Image (cartoon, rainbow, N blue to C red; front, side, top):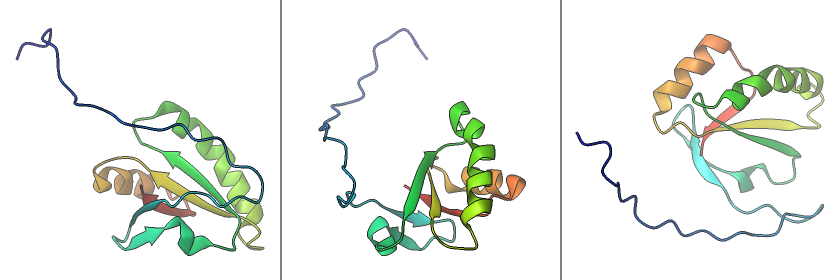
Length: 111
């Protein structure tokens, strides 16, 4: 009730890593598909992947959607590039509702 009181969010531990160089293996990322199946980035090994992290709460994510549609339409048939949307919404139904309303064709995973 008292929104002026401090809120203890705990401790966040993170480590900055240098950016990957061409040819280096990406770190493992795990998540769940929209269909609730387990997924790992390493499952896509051997395929060029464009991993887009997005959330329905994020304005810049929504702005990039038309560009991603154009890229996907260009590459979807020749399989030279796989686009995977890694959605960050913590409630899967929020992302599912957005995807149902917007009919995005590329794969989506909850990260």
